[in-house]
Image 1 (tube, rainbow, N blue to C red):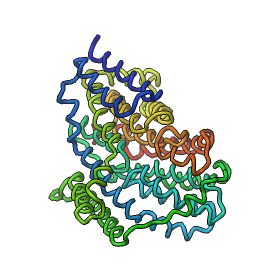
Image 2: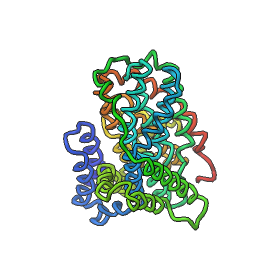
Image 3: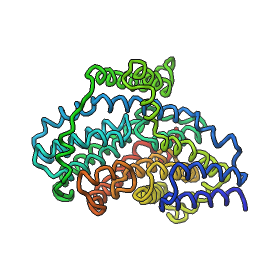
Image 4: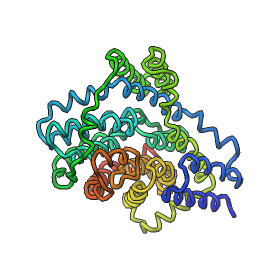
Length: 427
């Protein structure tokens, strides 16, 4: 069996196992590069090399700052103050989505939802709104908002690594590269739910409302403000690094910020270590060798040719649409980070086969993997609102499908405009 066939087989098995969810995700993603090694496709050093990559360091450091932001209660205070000025249901839906999206663009969507659930439950009780009307927009906003910056989700960094590695440094992804589509997508999603939410969002009473609404912050004020200032300065340094070459790269700025919140005892060293999302680290690290193997052996090229033959020569827009829908569909039943890791190299290969700018297709994969809003399976944040919102599986379908359709249309319009397929500068 050729290396390409072996790689395709491992890719197919990994996809099936991700979907059926019979193995722990950490074990599965580690098994992928180990299998490639024993099959003779990659060398031993390629298994662990990504663990010391810039993206991993960035994820770990920002997790520490995010944990400090949540521990101090600063996100709760800002959210409670913001929602106090929302007069009605539509305004609340819009604000909840914008706020959760903004917060999750800098810290994890799971942490964002965990912090904002009690606030949203309290706001719903105060305005006599069914909690489910606000909780689904909360997770949708947090999921889509992760597309605003490169640190918004592990998938963002996977797309960044794909673009920069496979272009051999000729293309770069700036801190707010994805914001070109992430901000319009978040605004459109918030407006969409604000307008149609009362018709498509479920309205369930929640026996958990009183418990969540009564939760109060018990944190020290100065530590919250210090953490917020640290986050702002860290992000500012990351943004400036794209333009001022003397500044340290993003992952170093993130490390300095993480050191600061531990040094000033906002969180303890033990809490800092506990803040690492090891599953995200494993996904980001150990799925990277599979992408490299697919490119090196020609497996990704085979898949790209198969997709191109399905599209029957209709050009990159149809190909991008097919890939978007494929990734989106898988994301509803498996990890959105996993789908992004699996399909970013394929998207790159498809675009290269056509001689088109690969960025549009890779970012299309990223966006499709982030619209994980149709089932409670795709991301932990979705399952977190099941009990407080008294929600069922089917409650996600109608609002999720409607929002996904809007996101698909917007992606197909904006991505070719932002990254023209046959821009001479990219060839």
